[in-house]
Image: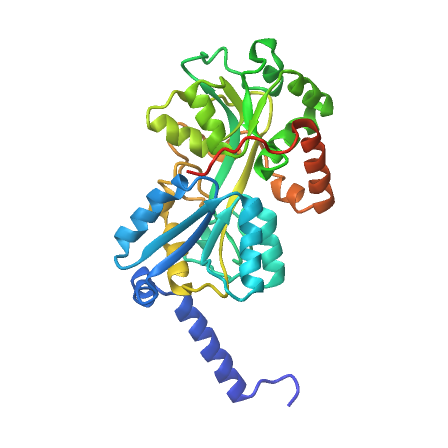
Length: 350
């Protein structure tokens, strides 16, 4: 009869819901038993490989018999590599994370991501998470000025956008190329929206240096080749400072700090799907999230020592809106390359 479900239909729905509940309730040990047979995690991460080596080692020690193969690089080359593999039906990637959030939105629309809602899903801040679980905010990153503490005192360090226009910093500043790195583009555009393109004209008149990637940037500041940068991912500054390097964050008291959820995702056709699900589940647990060196998207994880909760800062959070607006993104890249020229200095990823 119309409007009523047959007994067989009810039974089928109940079975389906029960199966879904069982799948969602899988423990770490149950996932590990499935993952051991696959034996490997093919991990692709944007930026320096060093950013992932520690957590990969921890994962291998926690789950003997599984090895992590890391591929690092720049988002602009990693995404096309993955697309090519998928087009050829030879995907070699299980898990991917990088700052080009627009690629995750595109892959979700294309239906190539495997939705995963780990047991941490309900604890993830709604401002960062995907409601369908197609991708997960594995960390929360932000950009702020960094300076060399041997060359500048805290009082001398540039921390606000207009500080970087001071004549004493002429030829002594560095950053990644904004047309090449979307997070850097976000940082520059956040300044330009407040101060106008005339700020960029004045900044370029101060003869800043450019290099590909944040690793080359922080190394230049550490070595004293540059005294400061307006664009450094805090995670890198915190890690290098902890290792005794002469670097410090210069939080702005005037300008918004660019911040975003660093997305991670598993592909539907991943060669090692159970290992990938195990990694995502394990990494999003509170224990791992408490030691990433940056903010967590989990609402029950405190910020790293010395930092306030991310939303207690004045932050710019429109990164996804900017980079998923393709006409705007292409226009900004074109304008920035007009200022800096094409890439001439490589920064490396290790």
